[in-house]
Image 1 (spheres, rainbow, N blue to C red):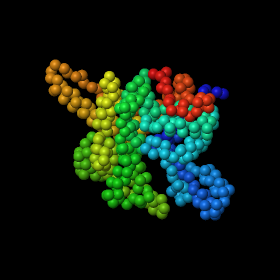
Image 2: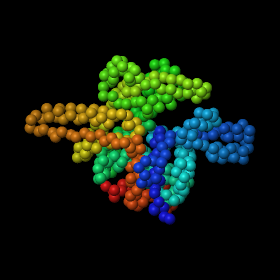
Image 3: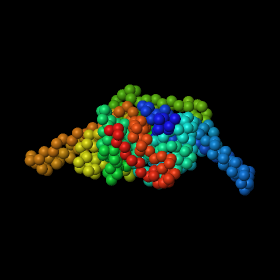
Length: 427
């Protein structure tokens, strides 16, 4: 059976979570934290006992290579045992540790998806700011280690745009606001091509929301075990946070009826097993607020997300701007806060309307500019929009023609992975 007749494997590696599954599915088969736990006790024991014996050190290294876990299992092993060290292979959207990344892919393919990599084409994703050398490393690992028949490396925002369409025709012109765990990118795309010169990146992401909530809980003196505080803050973010329309009104609501709005969180201390509880108050709306009023969190970066989106579109070619305002697509788990899309659309519309009024006042009654339609597209699958877009694209016949094959890799080398053609058969 030819590999092209089997569904392609789609793996979207994010800083916080990895989504993986097979092309043609609506949802990924697995969503797991992008983390690897390696047992380094073998190496430490060998250094103490071998005293220069190369064979003992080598066998210990082999054992350390075999004894590792990924995802939720890695996190639980590191908590329950002190012998496992956690490694986060992706930092701020870029692969920082290639050995850990190779281990991670190995477990994804063989333990989770349970498929033979030689029988499937692969679609992997990358951040829009990835260096071409990183694509070469990815190609080398996939073709040399896993012997895949074909590989396509797609830019995450383009896939998110493909997932965000709401009509039968896929609109490949729009702005993707991708807020992940490790980075926030605002990427304009025209006809499937990223307008690289207009792309914006901001240093506030989902992890910063977690850190801010952790800081607020600590400052208020909630009794949370220090080793558990980050995990509690992350759970609070995912379960209780929402976007408010007015921060002052929200404070007044909480002060008038605390029993209605304050939530309670209960947990168990990981070492002693003793239960503990804490109150969740203003953190519920202050966490996501850092995207709209970043000065409450950081002195260094104070530009709100709506202004960044506006600057991104204003720096794009003038003939694409109306289409870009009309199709602003949200992507990433940190855009899932309740009413996030409404707040972004409202604030962005204010900026655009203020500019239009100023322009009309300047030019008088002779020239009236047409109102600009601002539309922020929110959809139920925006948490894994990148993966779903990859699933859609890898289901088309053009995907297999666009992939780099093993034969091409052997003939030309890893440099073929530097560019991946845009294929337009699906829109």
